Amino acid sequence: MLSNALIMVAIIFVVNVVYVSLMTIRLIFTLKGRKYIAASVGVFEIVVYIVGLGLVLDNLNEIQNIIAYALGYGLGLIVGSIIEEKLALGYITVNVVSTNPDLKFTKQIREKGYGVTSWSSYGMDGDRLSMEILTPRKYELRLYQTIQEIDPKAFIISYEPKRIHGGFWVKQVRKGKLLNPKKQGETRESTLVEKDKADNQQ
Image (tube, rainbow, N blue to C red):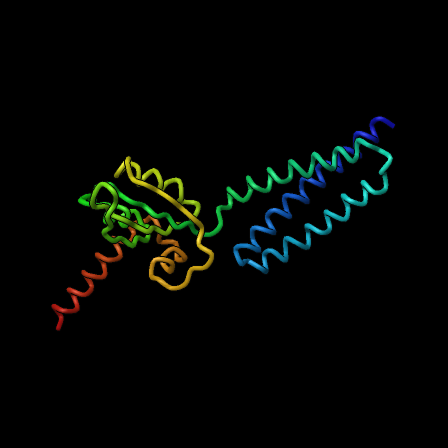
């Protein structure tokens, strides 16, 4: 009896961890606009949910099953969040204000493969260089590190854009060209060489 009770508790716990993890992932895909992937995850989610809830409802007199269900729910939220961090879906917009407008900040960030829009601004203590940088979330921490290496005193604030449309940079990212400046440089160089050859032939 005791072994059966422990097995039941373990099954309920694991089932609910899986269910809540799937639910969290489905919500994230829904918010990111990946409706077909969200729907596919939702199919598995509801099957697991029915199984787990059925096990609890069939044994409501067993308090350990209810506790296992609740603990599984809590752990599932944590596991789902960790999975979401690993997936790092979507993009992040980072606004940066540099205290030194004379730094070749924009050029250095672009050389790393990020999309940058910059303009001159004015703060309480004088001129500033303001930038808006777009990056996939998986490169977010690397971007922060790069910014602080260039200007440790830079002011940084980030947010997640809801919709992105147009722009050459996004097309490059989708083709896997981000953060590969060497490859991009080689492509430009080969293009220039071919153009020179064509000019010479003419």
